[in-house]
Length: 428
Image 1: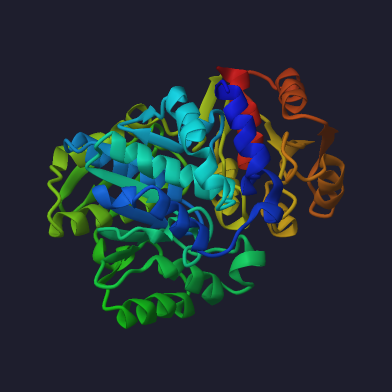
Image 2: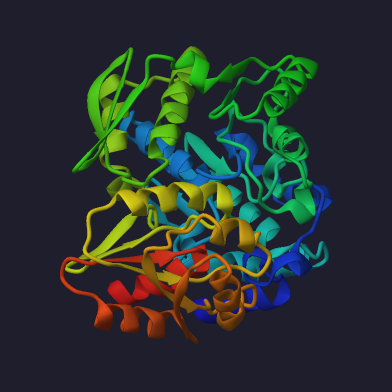
């Protein structure tokens, strides 16, 4: 098989949750443990950091990777989903896994892993773990896929666990209340292993983490308390951060929630220093300043064009899109255009209630089975005063938005990571 055939095989044999939803979801660690035994536990050959939470996992993971890379470590990063190329899910020092390695992995181990019947996520995770070992990484930053307690990645024994925040998402699997969701996310807290909580949230949520950490004797650090003198200022060029051990330094990521991610990351760095990592202050600043170049991160308040200004963001639930909506209202433009689509298993009403009413919407559907029908989205949006038209594809919606936009207008592309994934190749 060539590379394209190999990827098609992976999708067909092991359907991907991000594309088709709950039918591809496999609960529990049995498959992951079985796969891990087949490959002789590759993640035990290097240090790991585990990053979970509802939103901000990707930014936090890549920021940590960039800082560690600038500190002289060889760093693997495993994240999901990808936006353009499957290989985005696994990188070493910013370089994606080689196509030939993907082909060879499937051909060499196919008979062994097919007997386990792993999910797409389980198999690609193990591929990443094995590749990191082959690359002799010093440390790998591993992003949780869904939840925590029963997520495939929860077989690792990390030096540090990070939980960014808790919001409503994936309620079908994680529970319908924030404490229930927090309980699932808290499943990555390991015995005697420090855990950083980015945002405390409600008292009931914080108590979940306190109780879990106490039960396994894990040092618990709330970033909002630990980094109490942290200051984040939004400037015309982006975020400017300051903390006790760090002078003013800029952040390359300009998204509306990057101040919260920055505080979480700075706290994580301090904890890693206490556990024996060598991380110079200059490496922290350089990591924040150059995270995109160092890691290849995409889709976080990413500007694609300047006239008219076109911005995309992968926020995809009410917890994340609330910040996007607030940022859109504060931006300077003549008119606002929104190329907007959602996945069909999200709390659509909660999102639509948050979105700006001062824009023209181009309701669309991404090219995945989980995408919500654009006509249905349009109908629901009308109840919240959101006006616009429907387009059968993201490319059609973007084309219409560009035709209608003036030089001083703003076009926003988002609502779903799949919408952004369809959009990015149009701007290469």
